Image (cartoon, rainbow over all chains, first blue to last red; front, side, top):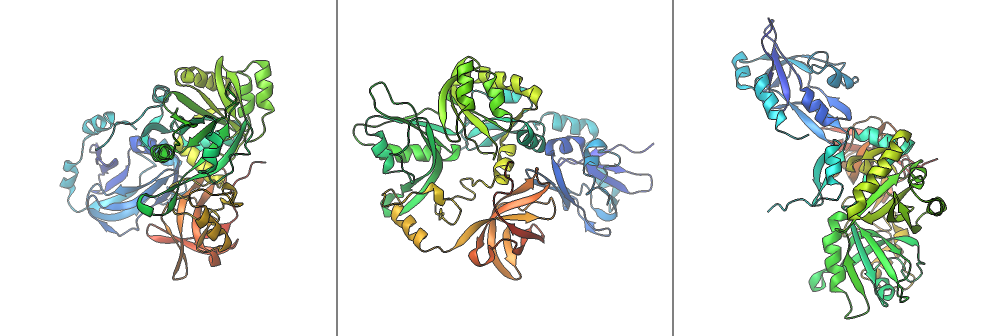
Length: 128
Length: 379
C-alpha cells in the first residue's frame, strides 16, 4: 500500500512512491482558491531544490503564486503536459495533475509535513 | 493600526453567495464569486452586476454650488444641464506651496434643481480617494452658499453592465420609467423606480459595455439588487466582483487612479485630455496643465499585447534592447481576447503602434507589441 499523502502549509501535496521518489502537486483546495489559471512555469529536470524553495510558479488572472518544494531533493521528472492543460489541476489534482517528482535527500523530511487530517483542519479554518 | 473594514449594504449578500471577500480601499468587497473570467465574459455577452457602493458619492448644492465647483474641477461645470454627467479630474493644492496634484478622477453630475431653484450636483469619486477629496473640498467651502454632504454611507450604488443590462433593469420599472431609461443617452441620468424603489439611474459605467449605474437608499439596496439578479440570471447575468471589474476596464482601455493616473500625471500624456478643459479657466493646476499641453514631453500611455496568456503586472519594466523605455501600469489576461495585455507608460520615441518591446516578467523577458487602446471595443 502506498504511504499516505502529506501536505505543506503552502498547499503543495507530497506522496512517497514505492520507487523512493516523492510526487508533488497542488492541493484541490489551493487550485479551487486560485481559480482562472492562465499560466504555469515548471523547473528543469535535474534541478536541486531545498524544502520551501520555489519550484515554479502558477498564475491566475489575479495573481502569481509560487509552487514551493515540500521537501529537499532533485527534480527527476516534470509533468510537461500540465502548462497547456491547466484544467487538469482542478479535475485530477492528486493524479494526472501532479507537478514534479523529486528524489528526496532525506525521506524522513516528509514526517515534518501535515497529514491529511491536519491539512483539512488548516484549510477548514481558512476562508477562500 | 488596521481599521475595521467598511461594509456596503450588500456585504451579507456577497458573503451568502460565495463572494471571496477582500479588503479594498478600506472596504470589505467581493473580488470574485466563482470565476473572474466567467464574470467578465458574462458581462460582455449578457450582463454583469457590480456592487460599487464603496465609491464615494458626494452631494453639492446651494445657490453658489456651480460657481464654486467651476473653480475646482478640470471640466466646465457651468454648462452642465440637469440630467447630465461629465467626466472630470479633481485637482488640489498640497500644503505649504507644495504645488498642485491630481487628487482623483470623478464623475460630476447635475440633478434636477431644488425647489428654490438652486442647483444640486453630485460627485462620484474613487473609494480610495474619498477621504482626501472630502477633506480638500471641505477646506475650500465658502462661508455660505454651498452645501457639501458625503452620502456614501446612506446610499448604495449598483452597476448593471452589458448588452442586456438596460433590458433587465427596464423590466423592473413602471412602463413610463422603463421608456425613460431606454431613451437615456450616454452620460445622462434620470430618477425612476426600480423594483419598486426610487433610484437615480445613469447610462454610464466602467466596463466598455452599454449599461447603467443605479443609486438607491442603503436600506433598499438588497431588495433592488436581488430583483435585478433574479430578473437577469435567466438571461445570463452574473454578479461580478472587483476582479472582473478590473479586467473589463483594462480591456476597455480605461485608466484607474493609482495605476495609469496618479497625483503627478500629465493628463494629456495618458490620453485624458478630454478630462481637462482649459480655455482660460482657472482651477488648481490649470497653469501647469496649460504648460503640459503646449509642450508635450515625458512618457505616454500605450497598450501592450502579448503572444501568450502570461501577464505583466504593475511596475514590470519595458525594454528595447538594453534600454529601459517604460513601465507597466496595469496588466492581466484579457479574457475576451484570450491573451495577456497591459497598459504601460512608454518613452514617446517607442510608443508608435506595432513597436516591438520586451517586458521583464519575473525572471525573463516577454515580447510584446504596442497596440492602440482600447484593446476591446463593443460592436
